[in-house]
Image (cartoon, rainbow, N blue to C red; front, top):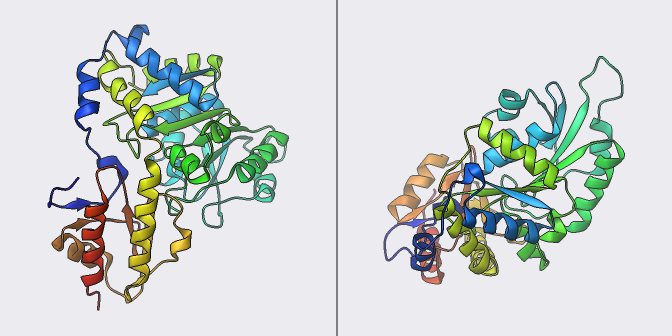
Length: 346
């Protein structure tokens, strides 16, 4: 809660652990995770595998590392990785798939972040020796850059089926996959069990201070542990932070619906303002992206919001992102809406 201070809506990564989560961290039983001897990490990995419908999982420091480990497992150097142009692994991971794995992104332009099976089939490289072979399809659910939109099980399954028909493995960047599951009213397993690997973040809407999970078969996760160490991600008494992740999975999943409801209320307020353009029905989870319509500079609008006590973030020229999360309650949201309503962008 903001307690009358700044209301930070830049991201759901800004949350801070509350008293109960801190208590769980303080009481955590620990060991050396590089030796696979941290009992709290082991419990987190077992619970995560169960929730996602996979044989095993691995605790990693960041979502980017989880995604890049998966790409390293699935794609040899010189292989194509098919993905939508707005995906996190392409836009926000510093070309890591090429730097770490020698993989080439084959970028497809989706509609509202979504691809079609026809696009995938057309993009797969033909089986000739002088073209880079296609190895992997990366999906993102929810899709951050497209405004937190959700792929349904049916949409995701159609893409996966097409990928498998063409011999591709499938990795799901599910950084906010529990948001997708809550929005759809289904267990996360229905979205995660159908891919070869899935990564999700504990440190976004779930509210843990650090950490992400990579899930897959027992064989893949054994290999992933080696790649994690190679990338510098081996951790020692990591149970202290793993305990926060366990607490988050037990207590902070169902409450994601509150974030979604608040995001929708904020979207309606923004839609009523003459300086912004947004279709509230497009807001499905906790991310609200608006377009500035009166020609005002993005940094100027962000400065005026901050002067009113609201921090938002840019998504490029003329686009601003607001993200609701567990540290923003109804009182904070009404304050933020008040700032939006009083904002003069003329």
